[in-house]
Image (cartoon, rainbow, N blue to C red):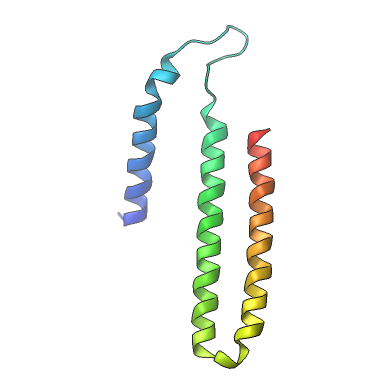
Length: 99
């Protein structure tokens, strides 16, 4: 099992253990439990995905700039535009998770 998979598994287990008292609490008969964790898992997935995407983008851009320094300006411009698009989509997804 890879390091990332182990980290995700341990993090998920820690979240469930810490949230056990909140999940055991009863809410109103009409409103359900006091905490709805699906929204927060969605937010976590959005943030993890966006950070992975921007990290991969920056890694590839820096590698290509190191291989061809003469086109570093064009690569940097394209990287900034792509990072802005990823951030915009991330904010939109966070907005959808919060509503």
